[in-house]
Every structure is written in C-alpha cells, then in structure tokens.
Amino acid sequence: MASTIKMRAKLEEAVVVVKALVSHPMETGLRKDSVTGEKIPAHFITEVIVETMERQVLVAHWGVGISKNPYLSFKYRNGRIGETVKLTWIDNKGNTDSLESEVT
Amino acid sequence: MNRIRRIVVQSAFAAGGVGLLSGAGLLAPRFALAGASRNAFEAGTLEEALKAAIGTTETIETDAISIKVPEIAENGAVVPVTVSATLDDVSAITIFVEHNPKPLISTYTIPEGTEVYVSTRVKMNKTSRLIAVVQSRDRFYSATKSIKVTIGGCGG
Image (cartoon, rainbow over all chains, first blue to last red; front, side, top):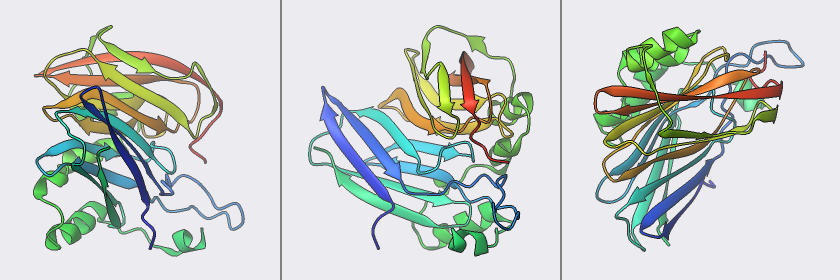
C-alpha cells in the first residue's frame, strides 16, 4: 500500500528542514453526513513523532483542529546529508504509519 | 468516505491505540501523552484548554514569539500558521484558536537541537484570535494574532 506520508528533509545552512504531508481525513466528530444527516465520527491523528537514528527531533500532539491532510514543517540542527529521518503517526482509532527519508 | 462512516469510534481510543502499538514494540512509553494532557484537547473554552494544557491561564506576552498567519482566511478549513521564537531553552510550543469548539489545536515538544519553529495548517470555525504559547524553562510566554475567517472550517 502506498504510504500515507510524503516527507522531504533537506540540509540548508547547517539546519535540516523537514517538510511532511500526511494523507488523513482529520474528522472533527462535529460534521454531519450531508445525505444521512448522521454525525461523522471523529477520526484524527493524535501523535506524530519524528526521529533520526540518534534522537527524537520533534514530538507533536494534535487535536481535531489540525486541517485535513496535515502539513508539518520544522527544523533541527546538527543533521547531516544521508542520515535517516523517520516520521510516525498514530490516530485515535489506533491506525499508524511511518516513513523513512534520507536527508539531502 | 463510506469506509470512514462505517468505522465505529473506539471509546477508549488513547488506551486502545497506544497499548496496541506498545505491544508491537513500535512505540516507547514516551509516545503516550498523560491522560490529563490528552483531555486538554477536549476542553471547550480557551481558559479550560489553557489550564489543561499548560496548567495556567497566566502567560507572559512577548514580541520574541513570531506568528505568521494570513490576516484574512477565506477558507477556515485550511489556515497556514508558522510559529517561531527567539527565546532560549524552549521545550514546547502550543497553539490555540480561541473561538474553535475545541480551542487546543496542537502541542509540539521541542527537544534540544530542534529550532523553535513549527509550520502547520489549522482549522478555524470563525474569526478568532490564535494564541501561541512557548514554554521556556518553567515560564509560559505567549503571542496572539487575530484572523478574520470568511468561511468557517470546522463543519457543524
């Protein structure tokens, strides 16, 4: 199955810039189905962790206020070209996915 | 969309989800947020959300935090937000939208070596203030931006 995650990590002036997009509905639980009128259950990513081989570089906790198909960008120091950055997410239903990317 | 509709929400989602992954050896306990903090995401007012997320409603307003947002958001479902700060020893960034049904949007743990910078996209139900709180040592600093929303993005 294709990954739900797209991620790019690029070394720019001694800082690794990580940009990631996750494919996820991020349902608030407040929306109603336009046909049946029933509430659409909440379904959203609760945690995101990004790590290199050595350490965690970011941990994010999300609520339903993060937009559908979430975008995340951040920067960390002391990275190097070729090292692996791994992003993992988990949602409120226990679904999870992760992706490894090399710093370029 | 059909698939999503059919899935029944697991009531104890936090325990169920994280437990499952811990069992698979995928996640260390560090991944799990304490129950009390997770509840902060359910808070219905800014004051409650602040108390639950950072333990206080008293923050120190500062120009050292920069919030980059559009002044007017035509689509409240997708509002780009970038928060950065020039403060030292920062351990966390937390974002709130005052007039959302659930004001706590997200919190980011900033480990040593990570820049005080996050960029994301948030939902805004209506015109509101967006508040960024940055924790440095035991202090909570904040900055605020008002965003005019033309079409709300939380559904209802």
